[in-house]
Length: 238
Image 1: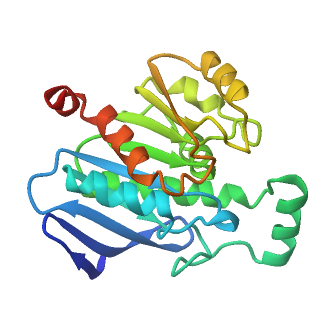
Image 2 (image 1 turned 180 degrees about the vertical axis):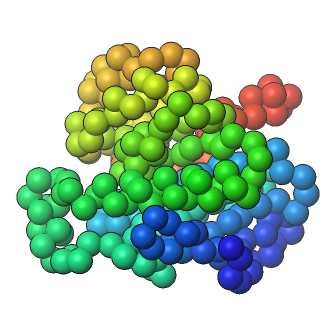
Image 3 (image 1 turned 45 degrees about the horizontal axis):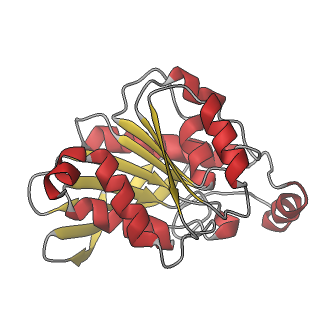
């Protein structure tokens, strides 16, 4: 449901939307090309305690970049973030638990928010969506996987040590993993070993010196995702 237009650039329109979740309404941003759209993309961002909102550097860059190349892109704020309703009832308590253990049970609600965003995008766009997760968002999209059709799955800087990724096995959509060679949350060797255990079809791209947050490397991340989604365009440029 559209609430307001945020920006209109040369070939991209950005609109704030409301996503009707199970028990709360979420704030979202729908970014799409002025011309014909070729696919739909859902982006789930990082943990709310670690820069997880629609203004995140990787999320925002990905959204506009993919939309400029023909995708309808939906990003959203988890419950309790920005204008999204809900969230943990005791933020100090869950934040304390997060810094002690790295996770807490209320995170399941944010996975449900991701599921609500996927459902909304399916209502607005007929084609099976691409699911993109960044950091914590990797777990939330994998947690929502069912035996539905998805065009592809993109995981950026997942931390398989923090959350379980076993639902990946029930989805056969092509998988892209993007990680840096110096991510402090999960070493290069650990990431490679985990990736080797994941089902096919899959592609792994390692980017240099991006750490976990890819500051200054956002365009490279977006370009890598675009080449995966539109390989024919990459071949025509070669």
